[in-house]
Length: 409
Image (cartoon, rainbow, N blue to C red):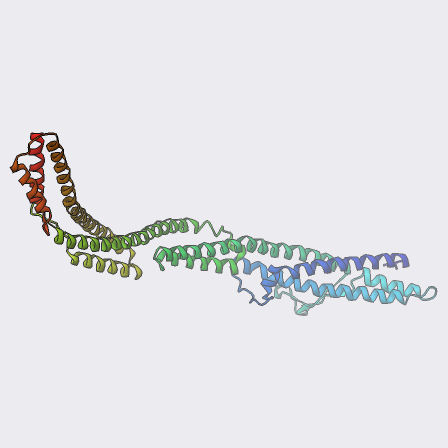
């Protein structure tokens, strides 16, 4: 091996410094990769216990990156040795020997590799159990390049797998949380399908964490159909439950209206008893116990709903609304009848006064009113002054007076 010239030595050292800088930057880039730190258990997380395809490929790649740093140091030490010799290179005498030393360092097998175990099948009786090998800096750099490319490719495959699958798992967990919230809204805090989804997510997460290269699946596709089914069912349940909430509010308002209307009807009935009597169509009042029982029934349904039994509550509310509606119709009819009867006495009094005024006008025009007809008007007027007014009798008298007066005039 002929010695390199000083110029060649300087050029070679510049090139080696550049190579070492670039290789160091690329190794740092791998070290700084989150996936690489995750595989090494750095950054406050434990290193995953790898399984499957990932366990077969990744540990060797991770170890190889560590070895590359060792090789980087070997190359750095060799280059430093060459640089130190270059600094001591005399301008005249003794330069040839030093240039030869530098040449041997940079171009010869100047780097000792760690001892390699000799396979038993290749050993003779006098073959050492370990073989010592030496390589040139260029050979070591070539080994490093091939090792880096293979290791980087494997680590980037893991990075790509985790970059794809981790967001999918996060999305699945978020959707599972939304389903849980929807289940609560639907009054179904625990459902078997949701527990199955949660367990499946745990299984997928375990697979992705320990064997990202073997996971090789779209995590979403394996669960989305089931999630969609659960979501649709829960949405229907939530809508049905919300309808019960609305119905409870409607029923509470109906109950309040019924109570108020019953009070008004009772007051109207009391007033009616004081002012009017009738036998033709007696007032049909709703018994107060019906209102009391309806209120107790609604309170029971409300308690049942609050206990989470919204489906039985929905059925009970339908029956309650039918009963309450019938009760409300009955009360409304009684109130309408009572008001009509109270107003009927005043209306009959007005009709009588109008007919008497008509008779008086006829008298002024010379018409003679029979005494019996006047007596009929007086009887009707006296009957209207009674307390209570016998409505049936008054109506008969007023209508008879109207008919006879109309026939006369």
